[in-house]
Image 1 (cartoon, helix red, strand yellow):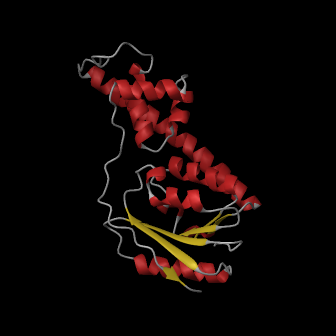
Image 2 (cartoon, rainbow, N blue to C red; image 1 turned 180 degrees about the horizontal axis):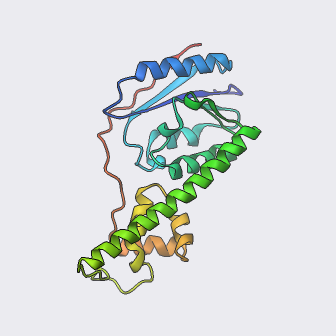
Image 3 (spheres, rainbow, N blue to C red; image 1 turned 180 degrees about the vertical axis):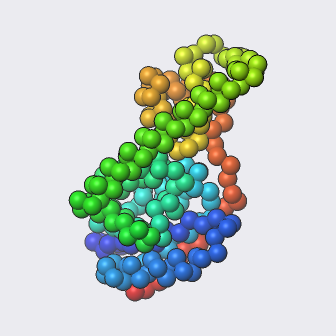
Length: 221
């Protein structure tokens, strides 16, 4: 049984371009030793960061960790490709009382004043990121209209106020926004948004890299 033993996870998300995995492990171990975090359990996966974190191994990790446990990453970008995804994860770890440390930048998200400042900054950047996605999508639609492209509602299901925002909605979801956030942004409910996505058979999933078998091992301090 686990008892009251605190758990420390070294999370490594890699892509086909990563060549420095062993260095990342060494850096994480060094940080764990400097903070006396004990044994590090490695969770490693090869997958695109654009994939919803709930469908990645980091989602499984967050479900099992408890208050007082720790996650260490080589850099915050390993948690997700977008600030939106990272902020979502930070909200969960804050609520559960899990500490997060990133080697690069020396970030410490552990309930301290520094953590609150970092989370505030992330929230500001995430809001800017959402607005930029929305604005880029609107510009693309204006350009298509100017070029003579007919922009109509999809055939099949009845009219919906969400139809005119379809490309913006898909872009936000692909970039990591939750359905709850998108629904609020477009003045509807998460249930109505989900029905709209299902009726129109909207595919907002990102392009994924192949995912190899999970690899988990343990390294003692």
